[in-house]
Amino acid sequence: LIKYKSSRVCHPGRCYPEESVVLICLRVLVGWGRWRNPEYLQFVSILEETRRNHTPNNKKKLASYDFDFSHWPADFSWKEVSNPKFSKGGVSLLKPEPKHRGATDSLLNSVRTLPCHIISYLVAHSFGRRMLYPGSVGLLQKAMRPMLQQGQARLIEEYDGQRNKLISCDGNEIDAMFVDRRGERGPNGKTLVICCEGNAGFYEVGCMNTPLDGGYSVLGWNHPGFAGSTGVPFPQNEANAMDVVVQFAVHKLGFQLNDIVVYAWSIGGFTASWAVMSYPEIRALVLDASFDDLLPLALKVMPESWRPLVTHTVRQYMNLNNAEQLCRYQGPVLLIRRTKDEIITTTGPEDIMSNRGNDLLLRLLQHRYPKVMTEDSLRAVRQWLAAGSQVEEESVYIGYEVDDDWCMSVLQSYQTDRETPFPWSVGEDMTAEGRRQLALFLARKYMRNFETTHCTPLPISEFHMPWKL
Image 1 (cartoon, helix red, strand yellow):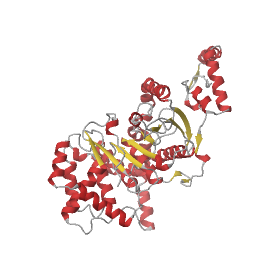
Image 2 (cartoon, one colour; image 1 turned 120 degrees about the vertical axis):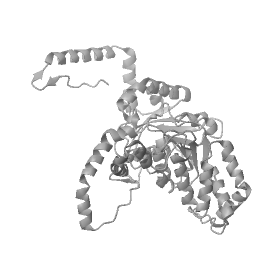
Image 3 (tube, helix red, strand yellow; image 1 turned 30 degrees about the vertical axis):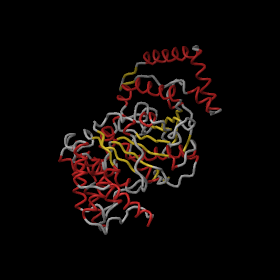
Image 4 (spheres, helix red, strand yellow; image 1 turned 135 degrees about the vertical axis):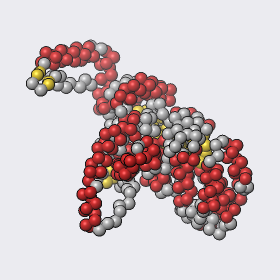
């Protein structure tokens, strides 16, 4: 496990071989000390045995040690299953629609915009990616290492967690942790919750804890470039990682897609919405403190003069289009909006209407129920969204005299008569009052408020399975 590298320290015109000798001697002493340590020899013996015979018992012994994850034997690879979603660049992503121009115009435009393309590439691959995913920065990971070690030990010792190395189609190694509750009493153990962390979140200390408290089987994983995972967290790599996580859950852990619920916090909404779009048989999706599109949030933190550059960079390299992906999913969805969120608002936490979770809800409702979501209905839902407390929210709901029983009967009747996928045409023959009632009813079913800030851990009391007719 000791990596030997050339230790010669060289500068233009100067070399110091004596320093190389000292460093080599130190490395030899460290290696000699380790090989005289019986505990280290036992660890090496277990590691070699696990590589030869990759059994659950050997893996459990290996998990007792903390060591460089690059030496952990691979538990699952995308190559083990036939994956039709894989292409040359990885799994398929939704791309921005190209603008149609004539051949001459297109060539001239390409030449004219070449500097912008170059700058966008440099921004995205330097500070842009690190600003978007600070958890991939080595300095932050080093500072958090004791906390991550403690969290990992807790998952293994208290919950009998199983650490796994997954190989995605781009060659990245994905660090994952699985807690199996199928053998325990209780109704939730047979449901697997796959957790997608935020941009500075790790499964060791992240949102895995919420479904664990609810007795669910849980599968957490780290973004590419986070902790034990290799690579960089660009959208394509993120989707590739999520794909192998889902494949692992189905083909190695033995869960059916309709036994899986995807739960995401913040920026994890991108991989979560990609998963349900790509695997529509997944039972349900829960998005906590997530947004509809990265671009408005990126524009918020950059100078106005940078708008064209920011727009081009986001669309080309960091296109986290959660709402677009979400609208391609037919299953149950729950959105959790944090009423004091300071991260995904475009003005500030005091302006709840600038929370991009509102836009995510409206996009979903407009896609699924286009005949219900008229201008009148949109005004009513926006008024409900603007409520700053549960009392105000209830006041708006009562003010529009929403009859929950009537709304439910209308939707159930429509579903029974047609059984059609979304978008539905329900509401086309309704009065304006009926549409308003139905819009508010649906808004309250699809979104729940949690009166706290962005980074507060979600208690299990606020974690619910999404509403389903």
